[in-house]
Image (tube, rainbow, N blue to C red; front, side, top):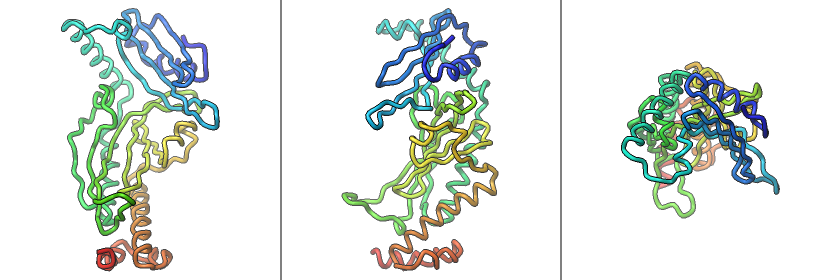
Length: 294
């Protein structure tokens, strides 16, 4: 199996889980310097799982990320650069479908609970008055949505309350934002490489936060930037409770902070005074904010 570079143990642990699916015969490791390290496990029928750890360039040196991309593809096709026949294409589709099904059974991502968490987030956004409207998109709750090459599938688009927004320099109209979902693969301190849900939560028209959720939805992490989970073990970041009560309180608080900031900035009221008010009392100020802004 793999024997070189920083994350060979983590990569071996990941590949071990797929041995019931593929009969691996060859293992290669390459350090592409600027682009990162590739670990490739190749089967006896020339299919491969490729694990890529990209590098960040900071302070005149490259730092290997603790996040990876995973691809499943045919070994021969990668180098032939020829158009596949219909039969070859059908074989490829069938094998990829089998990989997706195996992955889905192996990790059993809890899409229902993940979506429920998003519903709590959007409900609190609407209750706070920051969100005006939620427009749900067609989103299939299955691993195939993310493994077949779709990047950051959109779960919903969000229209914000114009009263609480401010246009930035160069902007001529208020914008919508999207709530997107992705799979990411992160390293933990116990030398495991594990898939997680990564969700971009827009809590204002200009601010977003990463929400990283374990597939069983028992652990959750929030990061302002990707750097936080790229340069640190995921289990060493601050975790948050995932029960409904804790989530409602957390999301209600971050939306209230934004409402208070907006009212305070526009009406020149001390934030300390606004923090004493309930959400409904804060909404009473929206009319005054609207009058001053327009």
